Image (cartoon, rainbow, N blue to C red; front, side, top):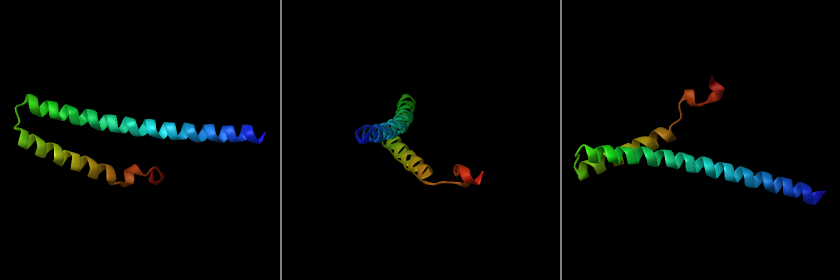
Length: 79
């Protein structure tokens, strides 16, 4: 009985970790796809490499800042 309970708990923990890693990978892929599209757009429109790098770095900074800041609408309990 103890072994079965331990297997169930272990399976739950492994499933939770797998789900978290999948969600993290999904978020990373979304960001990668957006910035890939940005780099493609800048290249297709003939933006100089130095300027394109500055734009990309700024938008990465803005993305990170926006992700790190929570507003009242992001907290479901306030609704």
